[in-house]
Length: 140
Image (cartoon, rainbow, N blue to C red; front, side, top):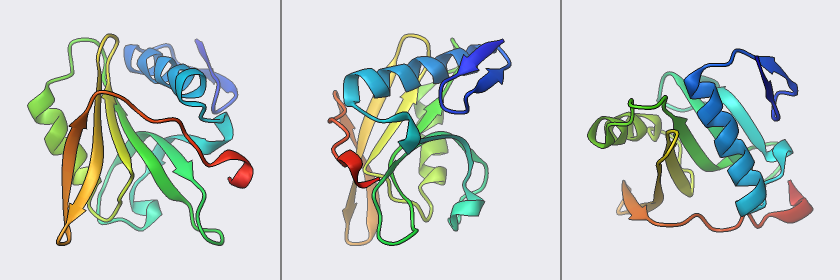
């Protein structure tokens, strides 16, 4: 069993969960994301998107009123399961109706990062080498 920092409980120790917890620790330590701004296993349909399935990890930014808007959407893969061409298609499906600023795909040794650009109503993933600091402070 692993202790999930976000859910504050013990969870099954799977390769994908180890990657998720490693990503949570990185986001908290390197990007300054508070744990309260992170959700795991987020049902995309419940967010009112056209996408189906679950996002492994979502980092929220401050919204207006009670509306939560994603700053980052992440997909975690077990070692050996990260096939970039397949992952980009999966992430593109997740983006139907959702517009996070950043998209991340991680496995045990790789972190693929994209920023999301919108041009004439079309969403485009732009490869990046870094994630910025989470900068919404105490507004969340």
